[in-house]
Length: 323
Image 1 (spheres, helix red, strand yellow):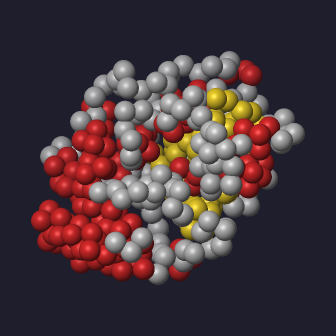
Image 2: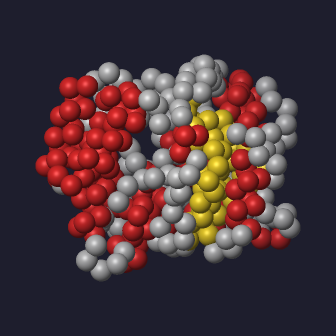
């Protein structure tokens, strides 16, 4: 679809004059929050502890549990609270980005926490990749009580792509969480923000649009503690592959994305994306003990491509040990 699609509610124009920005690169952290009282304080603390962060914008999306009171108890002038009236997480992120003053954006979920020096690490990488519109790292997982449950430190040698990543990214979302990245504010606005019509995988679609406009740079560092618990949007209820397929349709119907893919690759990449999302659904089924469903999803993978079965089976096996 064209850039002017009415489902995107974020204008491309920057709200602040260029001369109002600090001379050195500055970062705005956007935190969408809905009924996040259990974790929002810890999340804000992790953002306030970062260097080069000029503001933390919490966008409350209609909380009823005291989230606003916790945010209001902070006295740091960098913290701003906005209200989104239950318009959804994409609209909340777009609202925060529309009002951000920083050169770079971090989209931090209200139950996750940035690791020390995460923003400084990303900015240092951005200085060595001046053409990058997005700089990203990696994450580890924690449980509801903040205990480490992931073992991604075992994958230290793994390298994710840098440069022109569009073809790789359209075949599957290797970024996963917006809290591990810096996005250039002007590039995010020009790309149109998050598509509010998508319920799931709206971030993947947004990253693909950004990848169609410029390069990405990868930093092989664990920068985020990503909290996995039953309150997660993606994990709170049974999600089937069909829940994710509207995002596949959106990505491969997006003129900006299609115009930058190599000729003749869209069908193959779409199949790979479908396999990626079916495999994701299977790993989540395993994580929550729904093994029969996981096997059924593996059958769906096999129907799409027998060659992909071994790799998908390995990914599901790794999910047993938290990698």
